[in-house]
Length: 346
Ligand code: FA5
Image (cartoon, rainbow, N blue to C red; front, side, top):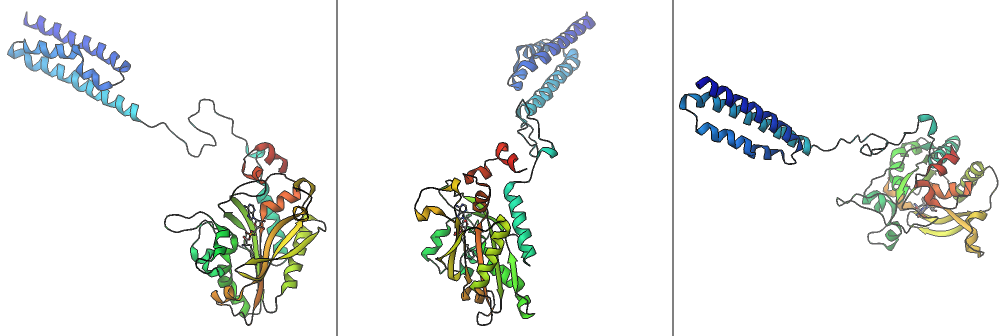
């Protein structure tokens, strides 16, 4: 009688276990399994058992409860788990239909980087060393060392992005002038001129259009030594442009203003047909770069004596140069990541 009763109740526990384990899979809130009527009924039954049966029966019901608690918690952890993201995947790892990644043979160097390499090569052959400009800088290098007085309106021409800590995404590569002078001024004492190219990426708060980007590249350079003059500046830029385009192009120098050069010029080149806006004289020219003789204050700030040494510097937009060379009608193509466009340069 006694054994028979225990056997019946144990099989009931097995039965409830099977039912609840199956139900657990379908429950949204897994913890609800612990409130199920079947489990409660098993505890109710416990109350009615003779004292000597309670121990074994109660342990079996508690074991089942523990089992269900563990299973419910595992289900909860699984439900809360964030979907796996492979940040190095060349596509969104969570999308069902995966795009086929391009094989290495289908990629190509970005046209801007290809042209930058060509520019570096030309200037290296002219005796320049190359260093990359910085992409995060400070007020001293962006303005102070370049002879921009505090609160001077010329600062507005270089409106860019700053961090809350006061770091600046440089609006031009000229932020490197002070560093280049300090880095290479030992050369001057040895009687060697400084000739450095420092290309890099720059940023501006800009209204974008066919010739203006908010993120673009500049190729800037500087030559400092004894007796360096405007004639050297013109000859250097002319030699570069002739080599780069492989032909003679109409060019002109017009007066301009930069706080860090004196005198300052704008170097302009004839617009190719595809970039013509209108028929006025101003529409005919494409401003390619700014240049001038390094301001004595800029030399002084880097510890170079302007009474003994002089120099020139220029800074040009890489995109504008490449637009001209290939007759591209819109500067925005470069950063649009369109393979149709990029493949034309592979
Ligand atoms: C400067 O940035 C000076 N730092 C250049 C310089 C260097 C002068 C050394 C003297 C000595 P500017 O703001 O004009 O100057 O820009 C230089 C060139 O960058 C322009 O001639 C143009 O080719 C290019 N550029 C300027 N703004 C943009 C833009 N939003 N998008 C694309 N190219 C641009």
